[in-house]
Amino acid sequence: MSYRFIAIAVAMLFVSYATVQWLVTPRQMMPNAKLPAFHRVGTSDDPRQNQPDPNESDGDEVRDGLRRVTLASANNLLTSPCNDYLRDQYIAAASKYARAWLSIALCGDRCSSRAEIAQMDLAKKAFKTPLDDTVRDVMRRVHQTDTIREGDFSPDVVRLVARMSHDFLISPAADPEVRKRERESRVTLSCRS
Image (tube, rainbow, N blue to C red; front, side, top):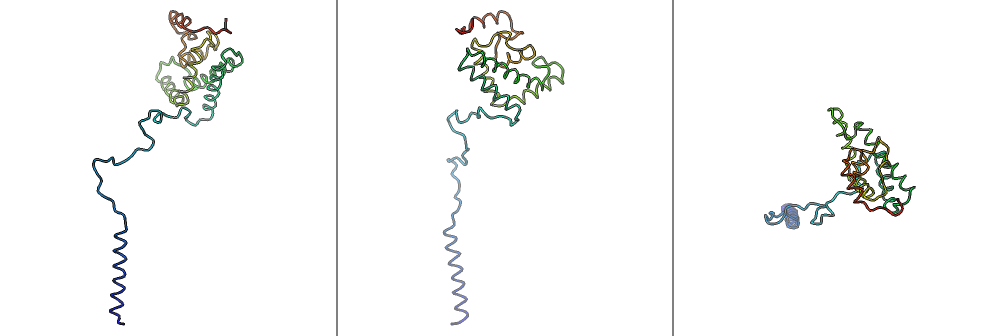
């Protein structure tokens, strides 16, 4: 055997190996313009899947605690609207929730100077999570019943709670005519005389 034969055999071995590798390796084909080039993960035609998680928050433990307590006490009150203990728990939780908002923006909803408006914007950002929206929605449902009445909330938080819950009946700033219509539209609970 000559060195020439061995060299040709080794060269043929490498060429055949490279050819097989080239044939076996997958190649990217030219994309078809009619087919979508990407698929968005997490999107669909179902609108329920595109909505944010109603329990998503900003991760602040203190605010999250206030949100959860207010939400739980409001849900408990909705299931048993004549229970005075649950009513008092809800009033205390909603008051603490409103005071936390007011601790950022001391002027509440009556801000006028630039500094006060900046504080109000900070409060709106701090309390603008999907969980806050869920809390306010449940607060609205509680206040649509006859469970909460005028005078239940202290003067320092009543305006903000009324605004958060869209309750014109407890709002001291509401027009008397609007308050009267609100009172007439609510169904009176049998336990509240």
